[in-house]
Length: 265
Image 1 (cartoon, rainbow, N blue to C red):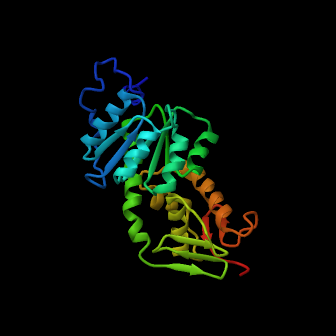
Image 2: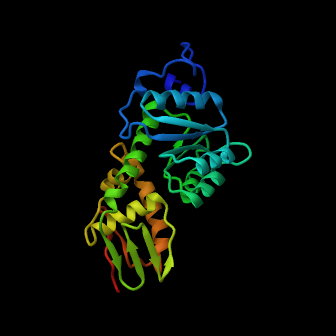
Image 3: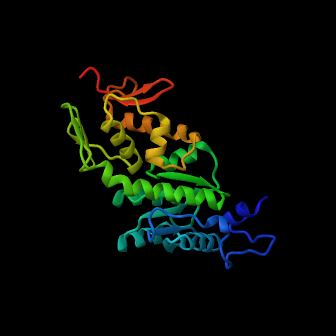
């Protein structure tokens, strides 16, 4: 197994590079938000030291928490630009911590786990996580995910500058990040809202999966993320459509992408 996957699991390199030493050159990425504050939540001290080295070497500021309860305390006292959240932890696991974080904050959440089953990945996304990275991972992949999430958060004010939609059933106010269905507030995760806002701003136009990945997940997104787009579109339909099985607003254009195009209103 290569050096980077070993380090991503917090193990010591056979070549002697360990958690106390300088991060490898591959970690020297150029972050989009110099000085962004990142909360690392993991009960593995070796991995936490490595993540801290990699991130601070790239210009980010970090804080650490050993479990979900400690992370909630940090978020109550301070503001962060990103949370890196492990799943398997004592006291309060990552899934429950993610759910509670979403009750008080829209901070981007990147989940880390050795749990590889697709349904477990979907559990994290459905609870409000913005992205998911299975262990072991490379430095490059971690940094690309971090940069993409921070870029997305930075773009949010630009996405929300103008635009709203109302037809008597569905009300979408992009500047206020507010969605009502039949007068009832709809809670959307940051990723769900970013996708919906993108489609509403291009009402009646087909938005390709590639463009959704690029504008919501960032330039480093891979076309393998198309499955994630499908999952989020299903979540959105369940939340905003009168009948998700017969969409009125969010339509799939086969082999092309998706449209926000109200029909039958």
